[in-house]
Amino acid sequence: MKKIGKAILSLFCAATLFVGVTACNEEVVNAYDIAVKNGFVGTEKEWLESLHGANGKDAEDITARDLYETAKEEGFTGSFLDFCKELGLTVVENNDVDRISKNIMSVVSVNCGFSYTNKGLGGSGISYYTSAGSGVILDVNKQAGNALIVTNYHVAVDPTSNERGASRNICLYGYGALNYFDPQNGDTKGNGMRATYVGGAVEYDIALLKVEGSDYIKNGNLQAAKLGESDSVSIGEKVYAIGNPEDMGISITGGLISVESEYITMEVQNSQIDYRVIRTDAAINAGNSGGGLFDAEGNLIGIVNAKTIGEETDNMGYALPITQVKNLCDNMLDNGGVIKRAMLGITLDISESTVIQDLSGELKLTEKFFVAQAVTSEKAAFGKLRYGDVIKYIVLHGERTDFTRQYQINDELLKVRKGDTVTLGIERDGSAMEVEIKFDKNSYFVVYS
Image (tube, one colour):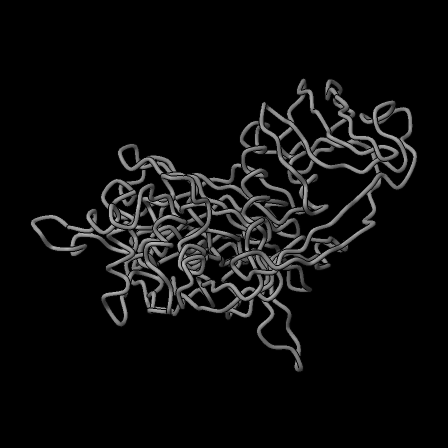
């Protein structure tokens, strides 16, 4: 960890060190203690002897980002912001044009053409209209000109149109692309990338689109977004939204996380549907739907899908958590464009809800939840789970996930495929145990499309 020692010293040699999203300012703290805390093994004398940089220049070739990357190699698991905070350094914002530019190139404008029939006393005629939104690139093959894009279901699908579903005329536009979209004929002279609908579900407001053989992708700078972990976002965290507001092209707005996880009810296709979302005060406008919500590190943490509108309401926008979105997209790709979600057949209730403040100062909400009703015979969990069981964790495909929030169990069940066996860690009557549940029947899954 000699590199850590050098870099730490360099942090204290300058009044302010600008390093991407953040800058670290000096505070009163012992540099050797910090080096030891972050992995240096040796005496203070040995540490001092290790501080000679390349060509006799102490730490000139080391940046704070180098320090963070080295710490990660030694087992540090937090973000760059967490790292600065753990060192006892003041964290202040600084523009990161390079990172934002990369994120902009992972977001596209989405134009979907629809038709409807006008019926009147003088006869009938067909009119065409455009549904405009945004999308985020999940995967791109530059050589082949292919890409996979996630957007909102309500952007790509209109069951009231003549199409009775997904648009058959979809064009995507990157930042700075020429847009000559026509809802009837598409784009014959601009930079529109023809896309096709892969699948989606109104119950989650998620849809997948694909582009194949696009010269614009082959010759351009579009790239896939870097996916983050929405389960780890915190209230007050800096975020920015990238999308296509008012169908005027790709642009960016900034704000904070207002609520890290909540449910909103929306009226969709004459039905009331609950969506789990992240709330932000970043400006969200018509056309932002399907765009990306990114954290200060440039990680995609949500797909924008709604905002609250009212005379007495401002700055209440919403995004679908990316952890859930990724599971949904993988599920769709494995199931031919539909979502097949495993169902335990249980009702859960929360018995405890606790807020803790971690070492970095972030607030974390934890929940304890249990089986609130008896399990009926036709359900997957029958004979395995009982009323009162507290569910602690899940093991699926060899990976264990410990539950701290109730919603996590539903997100994990999106990963289950027919034939899988799931292990649940539970607490029953004060004793810890595990139960295995095999999802070997079609009736154990509910299909969304």
